[in-house]
Length: 96
Image (spheres, rainbow, N blue to C red):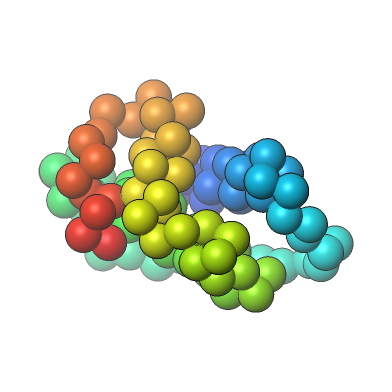
């Protein structure tokens, strides 16, 4: 469910920042979500949750497009879903 998505998004966000040499200060945060998109009906609910989590983390750590370029964000989100075994296409992330 959504908790797995949020946790995987945080993990991948951290990994990406470490790969790119972006230092993240040690700060606590709470990440929660609410959705009315039904599961497994093809409405890109998982990509919406992961995209929102990535954008929230970027805002929390004061990162902008110089850190994670807007055109790269869909691929980053897709990598989270792929890691969880979610079958998805890139088109869902591009519109979000």
